[in-house]
View 1: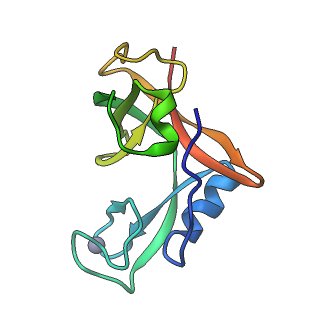
View 2: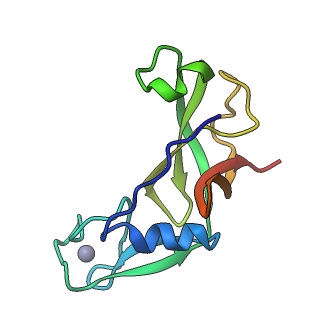
Length: 136
Ligand SMILES: [Zn+2]
């Protein structure tokens, strides 16, 4: 399935650099000890900008819910429809969500509640993206 190739900016570059090194690294606020994703200029909990750093996370999560995209408007992905779009919560902080196509899982066949772990997929020269795979 063709994936969108991420365009990193100044804010997200550390995240994508880590992904390209097959690591999942999220913003971490040293002021209130919260993780944050996607990257923002300030902590969404306490508003601190100067105490935002980065922290490696384990890359384990659970499938919270999903929808199946049957009639999406993203041109380059239309040939793949229907496809899963699952919401994954991070075990280290379930308030952190990721969206995943759950590679290897047939459309509509999503095992809600299952454990998943991060995997890294090639989407272009020198560019990986994070995806989530059901742990069997
Ligand atoms: Zn904070």
